[in-house]
Each structure stands twice: as C-alpha cells, then as structure tokens.
Image (tube, rainbow, N blue to C red; front, side, top):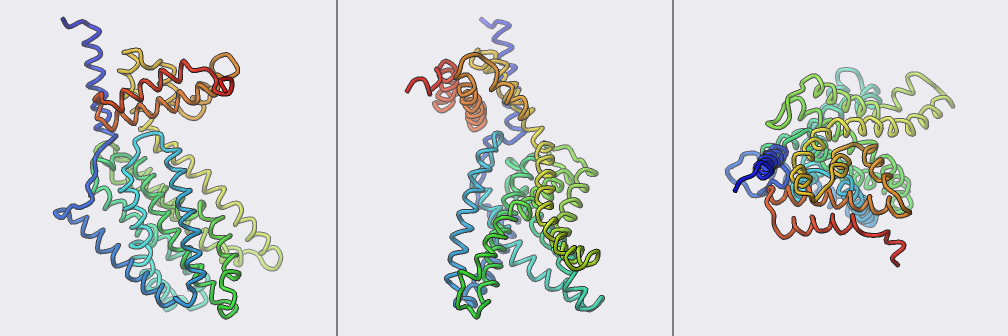
Length: 404
C-alpha cells in the first residue's frame, strides 16, 4: 500500500539523486582517455615540462644538497596544504587523482612548458620596445600575470574536458585552481632555491638558501595558490558549465582581479621605487610584503564564500530524505547547509558541559553522511548505513571528557 508519506519520501529521494548528479557528488573519473584530445594535450605538456625540469636539475647537480632539501621541505609544505583543503572541503570533494593532475599541470606544464619560455619571450620584447632597465624593473609584473595565470587556467579547461561529470561548478574551479597554484608554487620555490644556492660560490649552499626557504614559505599562501584559486573561479564563471550558470561580468572581474594581484605582487619593488626613495622606499616594501598577503587572503575568503554557495544549497536536497525518515534533525541540516556563523550557532546550541563537543562531532558526522550518499549516488549501502548509525550514536553520546 502506497501512502502519502512514502510518496513524499520517494519524491525527496528523486530530488536527492538529481542534486547529486547536478553537482557531481561522487562522480567517477578515469585517467586514461585515449579518445579525448584533452588527455593527450595534458600528457604532452606535463612530460615536456618534466623533461625541461629534469634538464635544469641535472645542470645544477652540483647544488644537489640545497635542491634536495628544497624538494623535501616543499613536499611537506604541499602535504600540509593538501590536508588543509581536505579539512575545509566539506562538500563535493574531487577525486584525489584529479587533484594530482591539477598539481602536475601547475608544477610542470604551466611552469616549465608554458610560463618559462613565454616569460623570456615577453621580457625580450619589452627590452627591445622600452629598454633593458624597464624590462628588468617592470617586466615581471607585466609578463607573469598573463603567461602564468593563463598557463594555469589552461589546466582548468583541460580538467573540465577530462572530467565533465566532476568539474561542475565554480567551487570545483576554486579547489582545482588552488592545486594548480600549489604545483606552480612548489616547483617555482625549488627553482628559486637552486638560484640562491650558488651565492658564496656554492660553499654554503644550505645556509645561503635558508632566507629563500623562509620568504617563499611565508609568502606562498599569498601568491600562486591564491591567484590561481581566484583566476580559475573566474574562468569557470566566464565560460559557464551545465551546473554553473554563466556570469560573464563576474568571471572577467575575478580573472582581472587575480592578474592585478599577481602583477602588484611581482612589481612591488618597481612600484615603490617609482614613488618613494631612501628609507621610505624600504619601509613601503616591508608594508607591502606584509599587507598584500593579508589583502589577498581576505579576497580569496570572499571568493570562496561566493563559489561555495551552490554547494551549500545542494546539501539540503541531499539530506532532506534523512530528515523525513528521522535520521537527521532540521537543525543539523540547516547547520550543514549554512555558513560558518550557522555552524557556530549549532555548536553552541544545547545544555550541559559537553554539548559543544558533542554537537561538533555530530555535525562532522552529518557531512560524512552527505559524502557517503554522494559517493553511492543516493543508494543505501554498508558505508551509508554506518554513517547514519554514527550520527545517531554521536547525538546520544555523552561528553567524551566525562567518560574517561
């Protein structure tokens, strides 16, 4: 016998499946696509860039201690960033392989196969047109925003062509763009370390490179990772996707904003030198080095909030059947679909010394359930049932601090 409640639940389940498909939750991705031209473009450029990087490394083999240490340090740096993105990505997580492909494109193709030769060509043009001093002072600021950002942006276009079922929204562009920037940042940092090692005639490679390590790690989050996340979000808005309405004005604005931030970052010395001199110039350089990353982070947080809005909205239809069947409460879904303030209000809601701790873990379990439902396409399987049971267990649990 079919009742109105069972009919409503079936309708909610249908809406859930549509939301999962639309946003690409749990979508599969295949690396080897021999009939897809985008696969061969990605592969050729990554191999080409890797070959050029290998040749540079062999040529600088005398400085192997500094270069080896750079690879180790920046690998740890990249691992920390990967963990951080996994921690904050509460929504439709992309397959790890797709993020690796974004990293490899940014690290090898965009860096050595595209940006390096293009930068050399542009700097040569600027020198011929405006003179060598102009090219040395202003060249990086007028070359890198075009060659490097569009080199990384090409990676987003290839990933969209390779994984149309996964790359569905501006949020996907934001996350993949950050990994493109991470790859570019790490390989560029290694290159800077290799260039600093020969100072003091290579007699103190590690010591000569320590300053470079510190500066590049401190400025990393405020440079390529940030620029690429903004640029690639804008690129997705500009072209539009089946699940992402085209917003041409917004997209162009974000693309230009990322390029301006990049240009100001690379040209800060030339900008200050043209406006100040002496001690004032040194002071302004320090101010810019401190303020530009903070401004960039504030902007990228705003762009993240803009891009993630659609992902938050998709949480509601995905979890609505769980509310109807009594697994979740509406307050839990509202917190999962809300912003940071909504999650904070939920965590504070309740009585007793352990309610905040308990509510935080319940909310994490709600996100885990949403991920498992996305992975299964809305079907119930062993992992989905376990996630449901975890929500119920944690909601009923006492504060762990009092149990021990």
